[in-house]
Amino acid sequence: METYMEHVHEIINGQTTFGALLFYVISVIALWKVFNKAGESGIWAFIPIVNLYKMCKIADGNGWKFLLFIIPIVNVVYAFLLNIRMAKAFGKSALFGIGLVFLNIIFTYILGFGSAKYIGPRGNR
Image 1: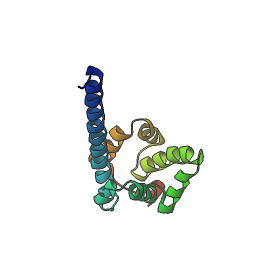
Image 2 (image 1 turned 90 degrees about the vertical axis):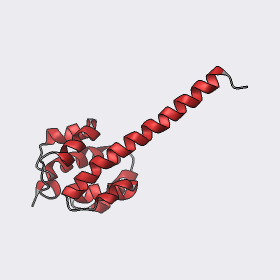
Image 3 (image 1 turned 120 degrees about the vertical axis):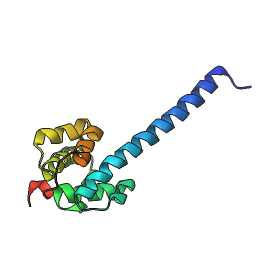
Image 4 (image 1 turned 135 degrees about the horizontal axis):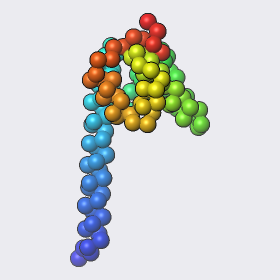
């Protein structure tokens, strides 16, 4: 016989899984739009390592820089820089890039669904 706490844990686990899946889908939709604006196929937003490669290519001009995410400490610094460069690639300020760091989904939606136009890596044409 199932105890009350086992039943509660099953419910919480199910909700956590659903929440994580919902978060993933929302993130992919936002990233899909950003990729399309940058001239990349949105389908790459679904594949975790490939989407990181594409983000590096869009924001920094060199997709292979995604390998910097393997190196501890460097990965944190580069993630911060990548978000600022992503903002600049769409004609936004460094402050917008900091928004991408801390409220990523919201600011990615603004990039994807807003009026921002892709200018090129790091904001260069």
